[in-house]
Amino acid sequence: MVSRLRKRIFTATVLAAMLAAVVSIVSAADTIDPGATGARYAWGENVGWINAKAPTTGNPGVVVSGLNLTGYMWGENIGWINMNCSNNALCTPANKNWGVTNDGIGHLAGYAWGENVGWISFSCNNTPSTCASTGTYGVAIDPVTGLFSGKAWGENIGWIVFDYTTSAANRVKTADDGDGIAYPIDNCPFDYNPTQTNTDAGNTALNRPGADALGDACDVNISGDGYTNAQHVALGKNPALYCPIMRADVDGDGVVSVLDFVKAAQKYGQTFTPDPTKGLDTGIQRLNQDGDNKISVLDFVKMAQWYTKSVTTCP
Ligand SMILES: [Ca+2]
Ligand SMILES: [Ca+2]
Ligand SMILES: [Ca+2]
Ligand SMILES: [Ca+2]
View 1: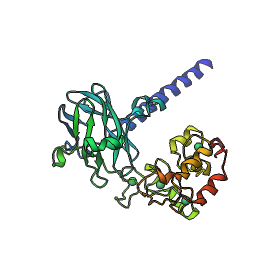
View 2: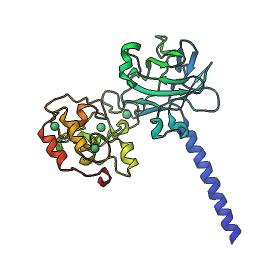
View 3: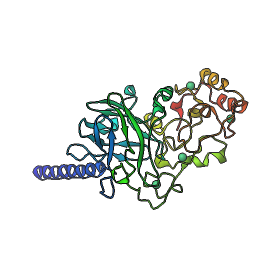
View 4: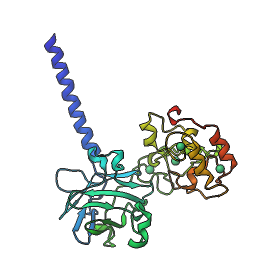
């Protein structure tokens, strides 16, 4: 009896291991060069070709989603370039969870890490004050063709050019998301999301801010309350639920206090035009508590309802 039970446990363990292996192979599949035409190369001015399909064994190539890039590039002279700390569980709040981000429609930013060459910046807007001295640079992916363009900057290796050649054959190209909906109708052009669910699109009718044109599959804040999906999850909260306490906590310290009112007061009376392509409100837009695109006494009234409340009480 005991041995039969052991055998069953053993069988179940082996099956689980096999399943895990299959899952990891599936999730490791890169999205680059879908037609196998060689559309996988960027050019480093000082380091030569860099392959986004990572041809040698050991690590997967680049995986593009509407939220970020994961996987690795391979430099013929510089080895592996890690696109995201999540590849190997290196992410911590202290290291700012580094990685290359996608705004949902192909504008990349953030940092990759080259094992031999250090940080590689995918947009000068990582530190906007540097854009003047470096010239405005960044890497983008065309949401229609999947072709990369623009430049990244390696702190030790200079420019990495993603449109070194105008020929599509030697440029990095990512696969279509396969949902049968074409951009700009597709609200997440890099994610398979046939339902096109966009939770925060309903905010406007409820006189709430945070509505945007991004589907949930590529939106860092699907509820539109100003806290990211990741922040909701870290607090054990439902990312799909709009929490007015999170909205009122404009400085993000977890509680609605006089500090939040001070921030809002600094922009009192100002108006703005929301950017429908941004999944996360920033700047003056973050301070708005209702749907009127202006910082007014109405916002203070809404914030006052949650005074001294902690975001831990959100659902
Ligand atoms: Ca899609
Ligand atoms: Ca959205
Ligand atoms: Ca606060
Ligand atoms: Ca307002």
